[in-house]
Image (cartoon, rainbow, N blue to C red):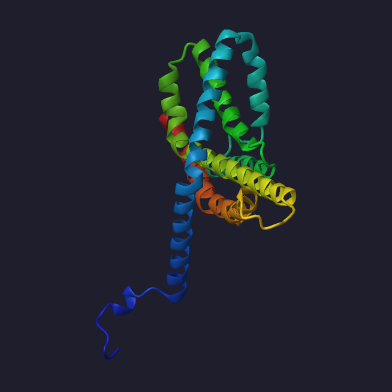
Length: 243
């Protein structure tokens, strides 16, 4: 075309792709701000809960080996819908569905204010890992090496996703708790503009927690789900090769 340099048409993105890229960049900018302002502190709480669950689970089953068989049977029953003998693709998709469902439930538990129930999810996951470590130890396996080959390849992606989902759920629970407190304080104050703490706190809390539900949905869609998808494919395609 006259007036255009060779290859200039190839350098220009279609308008819809440029628009999609702008939207995506905006979403991740918002996500980074949420991480800095809120999620980071809750992520650290979730990480500590995971560690506590692992230590407690490992120590308990090392001391009470007679409980291992029953606990392991319960764990296997919970994972019975995962087709270990299926093709890698089917296994990956099933793992993704299973982990996404569990993470969604952990986030949804945050709709109950004050309780911070999502923190129970990393405790349970840590206890399950502690159980597996105890079983492996009692069977004479090299536990660090076993975990390095069997858990680490996908775990370095999956565990952060699980902890991020937990931080989303805790943030939601705390945000709803703040809104409840704000309404109670406002009602106690009778709605009068006293200019004091009781009047200022509700406005501040409602502003800080506005859009908490939308924030959590965005976080789950653009952070948790992509990480879980990658982790599932690593677990199905790469982890078996390392054995």
